[in-house]
Length: 384
Image 1 (cartoon, rainbow, N blue to C red):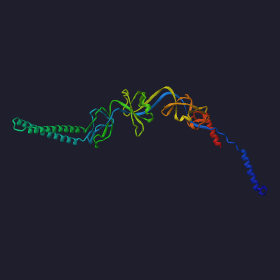
Image 2: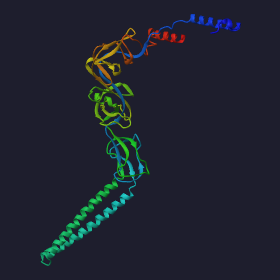
Image 3: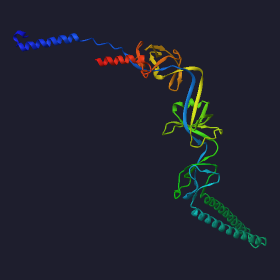
Image 4: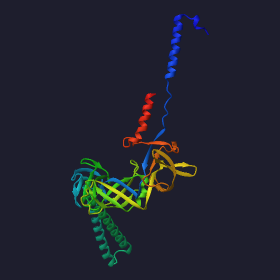
């Protein structure tokens, strides 16, 4: 190294200045403050309740019987007599097809019947004459038997022609679509001028009388709700009025669009203000014999063969062994180990250790004492 004596005076002065600055900076440094490790977690306060199931589902009021009516013969619609919401009576006409072709077919069947009757009358007269000739021994028995067979064949042709005529008369009558029940028109699927095939639904009629509410329930609640007998029904228009309902049918297959199972709940006739299409709420409720404590599945901590939960006390956690007693939907029923009123961690259980300080998410604003460590940490970070 070169000594300062060999350097120029200006260079020596600069070197001394840098050394002095380095010494001052080294003397001004402070040791970093230690911050306490506080884990943010989610937690719930345990509650003891005898309510096993308490679920509500909204649905729609529908008629128990709703028919999709269609013409029994093909043709062109020439008139429509009802609209959606029309109240109809049994036998009332709903739509009309063009009847010309059907009437011509009926006239053809009638002409065939007249021809068959004429042939039968002639065969009958022939049989009568040959019976008189046979009585005088002018003809053989075989000839008489032939005339008798001809008459019976002609009579059979008449019977067939009569049946064909009656069938064609019915076909002509099917040109008018009539309601077979008293009810309300809920949908119109065809208009005048449209050509429809036989059996194509053109009008929907809901039968007056029994009504029900159709709801959709998720697949994880089908078995639980199936056994519940306490079912209450309320209309959205009058939520203060609740009446008992009864599960009539649960669909065996899920809806392909919503992936829910359709449930039909029968409502009593006393709910007379229930109109088709109204919104209703169905409530299912059931209770257990003894109060139970439930926790989410995410609250359980598994270590070897022990199941535990993290209980929060004085801002820190401790591991408490518990005994699961069963499953209730998405929750676990605990038989022992904890009691109502305790705070249990439900998220972040795998990163905790006994005595770990925690901060419950969502309590920062409601509990100022829990927010102080957070403010301290923020200040320490800013000073760095």
